[in-house]
Length: 249
Ligand code: PEP
Image 1: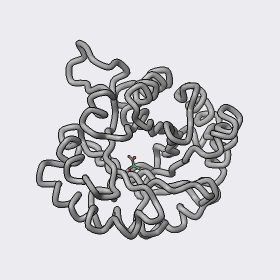
Image 2: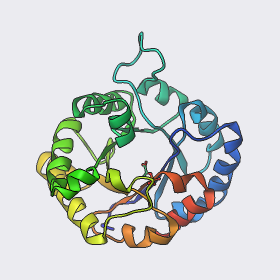
Image 3: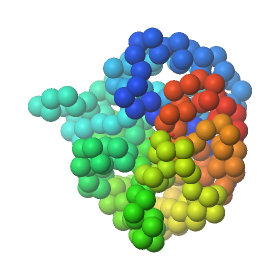
């Protein structure tokens, strides 16, 4: 970990009902210790954002969205805007997650528009990039990640408005993780690209690792240079696991 304050973010995906407030309650109860060293964020499904924002009041836990539309409002049935998330009290939004890129054919250009929408609404954009297994096997990892960064990141990124999450698609939800050396190589590459494009600000933008992070591998992954925190899917659904990862910072 470099000198940047880490971010430990949970992506609940399409999981969580009102009753999940008890899991959030346990996260809040255990947050004080980890929050001394890291920012903590939970991204629940949109139906829970408002209630969760109420629940985390006065705690060090922030609430984020998992996606947003590029427009502030309009005839887009089923979508929610960055302004709506901000209005509900969210402080960040994930954009360009590989599941959205795959399930909804989201392109780099659209992800960029969504990141711009997040900024327009005053939210931090957590922009996800990462290669598939086939792309890694073909030796294309850095090409793919470089292309996604170029296409998905808007101009004007700062340490406050942007977080990049490197999530190898083949590591998401599979229990498989890259080696520390592989993570280091990609994170160093991302850091170089950020510094090239955003100069000093690019050296301060946090780069999260995501993909099968759990309490047992968190310390090793979080110790890799230029890994400034984690984006956690499955393990963030259990308070003990989320906190266990946060404690590994
Ligand atoms: C994710 O989907 O962002 C993720 C990292 O999932 P998991 O931790 O379950 O691999």
